[in-house]
Length: 213
Image (cartoon, rainbow, N blue to C red; front, side, top):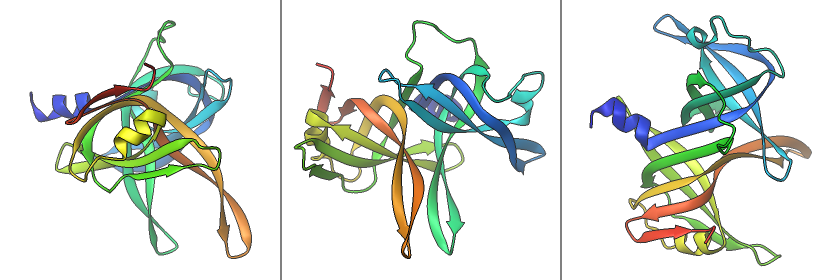
């Protein structure tokens, strides 16, 4: 398998939803302009996940990307570091590889990652006795780059993932979710949004577990 094919198969995203707002110019790489956009994807519960996108101007040619338009896409969940107030912040976005026809029978929000545990997992139990485990996964990309993707597991998956060690190879499947929270800056509460993969299935060197079983 060549490097580009391996990159695509180790990080796959399918989304189907509606554009929120208008795309905003972000940056240019080798003469190719890129735009930031947001996609609203409906959960089964009826709640919306608002997911950030990075889109090439070349994919926008001849396509309406106005607020409210329905789109389906294939892409990758990527990360980069941004300096804010002298501190490095991990920014997450779905890099759009192509726009496609929506598939009616397909889950509108799926992500598959093959990577490595890069920090000790954090297992905890909430006051309501819900088991949760936070995992940071490094997914290799071409040109010696890596994407660092926060993931969250629940229940039996959480107990299982809590035993992972740094360097363990893992494969996860789930969905990208957005989560609002408050952070205090001085005495003022500021609304922030976190993005992560909510894990449905885990495959590791230690075996396989499916939360749906």
